[in-house]
Amino acid sequence: MLLVCSHRCGGALFRALFAEVELDASGAYQDHRVTQPGYVCLNCGAPALDLGEVPAALEEEAREEEAAAVKADVLCPVCETMVQLDANMECPNCGSPLEVA
Ligand SMILES: [Zn+2]
Ligand SMILES: [Zn+2]
Image 1 (cartoon, rainbow, N blue to C red):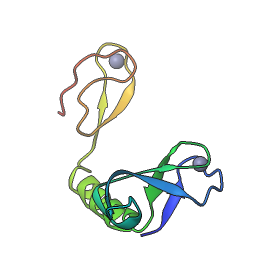
Image 2: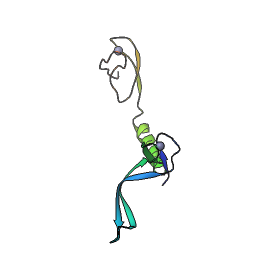
Image 3: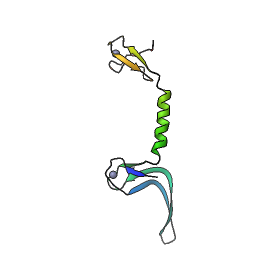
Image 4: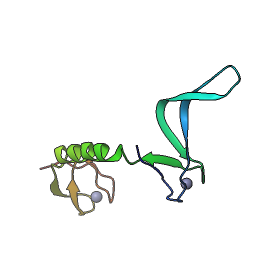
């Protein structure tokens, strides 16, 4: 795990949002368990990111993008904008629905 503040404020302390803390009979901290990943920066309150998890997530995203990277250039019949189509089948300029020829 490598937590960093999403605002890059330099804060080095973070709080787990979903953690169970185990105490002894006098209330002294014994142990804790993080029940869900989710952390905030104690310095500025921004959500913290776990850089240890990011490479795997990025890799997955890249794989998905590769699979979706079937693009075609289409001329919008309404406003005559050259549009690169991918999953989004609308003209970004005028919003007309487009079809890949
Ligand atoms: Zn911060
Ligand atoms: Zn258009």
